[in-house]
Image 1 (cartoon, rainbow, N blue to C red):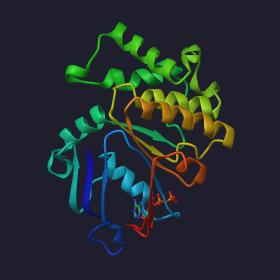
Image 2: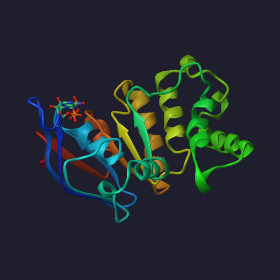
Image 3: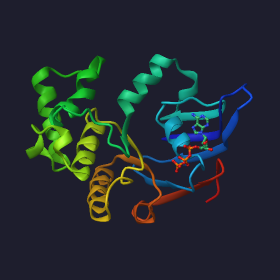
Image 4: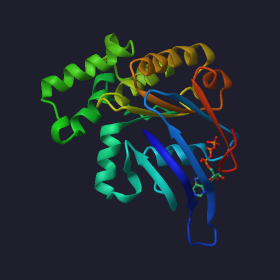
Length: 225
Ligand SMILES: Nc1ncnc2c1ncn2[C@@H]1O[C@H](COP(=O)(O)OP(=O)(O)OP(=O)(O)O)[C@@H](O)[C@H]1O
């Protein structure tokens, strides 16, 4: 499903401060796999995740999702792939403070275009269903700034899955959480994986990596294990 062949990524390409962060990454992630990406600070984990998420481009190599080469499509098509196929979860939750949990989950549903677009009432029902899936339905009307870290991350996961993406990419999703809350959030990811979603989690935490079916270690911009 996800296939990277010899991906090279240089920051500040062509400038005096150019820095090659990925030196030729090749890997395959199959449908339904739950994969951890680990490695020391600066190894290139976030860089790789941003490429997978179609947030960042790359210099050379080939990246295909479901056989479609991402590098060859337009910016607009890339945004479409991002919206339809990928859900992102960040360490700092990236929720809109002051918005309720429900309104945060509604954001991707309100932005969805084309055949994915639902009517207003259906969008609300869908958002509530997503909150229910992560155990947060009863908090739907609460402003997210009044929630705990673990609750915020649940809302962020509900938002990430709102448009039914097949791939969930998470960048240190438990980095701001204590170990008990980390365990709860990992249970949410495992449940989503069991429902068939492909999950890639960048983490520093061995306890998180341990719960993934597969671990990819990156050092110095290369896969070493
Ligand atoms: N926007 C940027 N401009 C220049 N260099 C960058 C940029 N982003 C990252 N880098 C460099 O690329 C390398 C890989 O960074 P990346 O953030 O992918 O590492 P990481 O493994 O995610 O690290 P961490 O665990 O600390 O988040 C680092 O040396 C970093 O300094």
